[in-house]
Length: 391
Image (cartoon, rainbow, N blue to C red; front, side, top):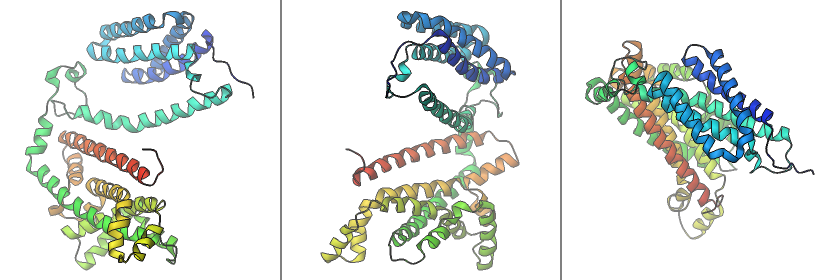
């Protein structure tokens, strides 16, 4: 099989690829200025010219990259002040790095030498597509966070914020959240409901997963499909069904009714994570414990539970997030006395546009990030316990 030599690229190739990246970033900048197509055109032309010119000066890479970053900073500051200068640092650094990364063929350094140009193109195209999807998903969250520090009661960036003026930033929305009685009552309701719902979800979900993992259980697939159906059925249908059912048995509008409804939504997550953990579980350990005289309960808590604990905790965290963030079911099943934090946020959007919602959303994002980091640590620990990863 022929090997592809790693050598410097031609100016035309670098200019063409750099023009594509310039058009992508120019779309965002142009859209913010009211003309997306014009931003794409300017970005493509600028990056193409830089790529064509700098490809022939690879021996001066460091000097050019520093000069390019400085030029973008000056141009940004001259056109739109300090915020544009900060963005100029990023764009200048990226433009210099990207152009020389292409020109010196460093993009092929870690790839197999026998890959064709088409295979290399698909390798990076796939990653660009994934990156674009990630940016599309994460941008709305990133926009909310700085808006929560707005000193005005607006849902937009004020001129003071765009100038990085300290007068445009304030913690008053966070202060309102921690001092407003309605918000605190909603937070307290969520804190009371979510842990109890999580406890029920973990208990029943873990037992169901262990039972359904046994090969002798009849109709395992059908039972599994029924148990995880709350993840598949549209939430509004589940909420309506719970309302009519709970109203007949006296649970509608009660604390226990909301807890049970949230537990139903959390059980599928526990079942899935615990079932995945049980895939690598060595069943000879339970048989050995039984041969040594341990009963089923002792075997479960002393042998099985320590090994599947990462999956149980992961499912519990997912169940907790589901309960803490859920709003549709509690609107149907709960009453004013069970008004949770998401319900209060929904009221804030429907009845009064309160920027305190942005502060609450930022706090919830922070909590979610911590929980997801915990899930990742537990996943790695589970793999180490099952011998699927080193160290």
